[in-house]
Length: 231
Picture 1 (cartoon, rainbow, N blue to C red):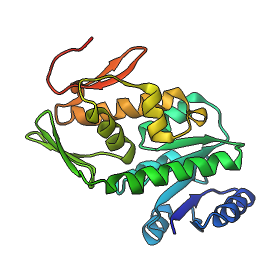
Picture 2: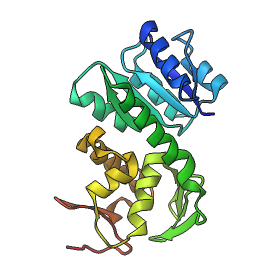
Picture 3: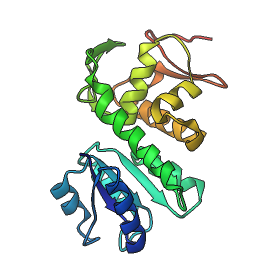
């Protein structure tokens, strides 16, 4: 049974989400004190975090940043605000997805299920280690290591990298990546993938590998095996 930490100050909405998710056999925990979100996070050890943007004292962006400094647990934002920069900010801080309020509950469940399947099932494949551009990639621990050091990627980042290097030197379409990541592209903003890929490239830059991921405008992305350009 997966544990979900729901950080939501609207008590009526909290109860509704908790009851509905409990019907899907999820254990849902709340936050009794919004000054102590990290203490609750540590106590619960959730498999997924649902978090609102507008919260008492500190907003959801603050708590996302705090959680990401300690954990790569998947984070899904809920928000009644409709500014596009909210989604961009959430993704840049390490969120895995974003749901706009008011939402159809089936959409929320579909997104939760897709994230949980991707995060906790895909890395059971036989091949856990792979080399690429002189780096060793540990898919089980989400680590990329080369002479410049080691970086730890988020679940989305390691999944995107995995899909790209499985077809290295070949273009992987945006549509294929979206379907692989979120399973139903009808519920996903095209900008969500862009933000995730840019975040992956920025992390890879820390060990000198960012330029090996190229954008092919109007087509998709390509992971180069060697430092060269492909048309």
